[in-house]
Image 1 (spheres, protein in one colour):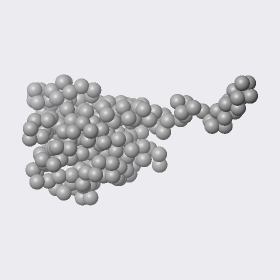
Image 2 (image 1 turned 120 degrees about the vertical axis):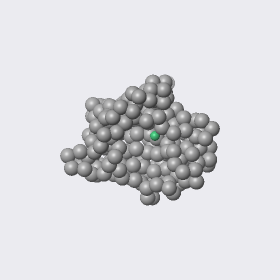
Image 3 (image 1 turned 90 degrees about the vertical axis):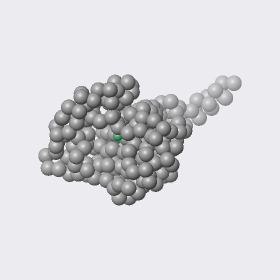
Image 4 (image 1 turned 90 degrees about the horizontal axis):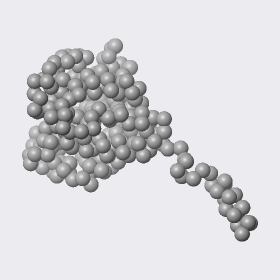
Length: 243
Ligand SMILES: [Zn+2]
């Protein structure tokens, strides 16, 4: 009996710590997750139309977002994917900061969405959206900030690397094609998005699909597909952070 117990302890020591105590892949990392828009934005049109400084231009605090042809709101979709992603990242050991956790309020403004990631000193930030493109267009694209002196030049290179990692993981993990109506090869670079311009941490937007396209909409409306998207996004973020 005693010999068996001693052998068991020796085996445990040789095997290293039990899984619960193993170092999680994203331990010590902070990720800012920004679900686009908000469910109450449409009902607060004047508040969200207020102009804010987006770095390269003044533009609305936020917008209402799009929806599928049968009325699934982008804001609800964005939040669902964001919460799924947050759960996965936390399970991998990350600290996750969300810009909103409900779909009933309005805002925050694009300026605050960037500030939340900055204040958290996030290692990486991602804004989750779905597009309202032409009916015939489908596919996803990842947007990273153009390098602008004294604005995004400090995060542009890292954000592009993040965009490449997220694009690869999302493409493989979901099977969604690159957008055929915007960007190129699933990537776009922009200088007019306050959420990117005002970020001090590596950041991308993903437009996961086109809500106005029937094929994309059917996927985006599936809970199982949204979980696949979240898993793919988590893998992309993990790939970027493990470099
Ligand atoms: Zn959007």
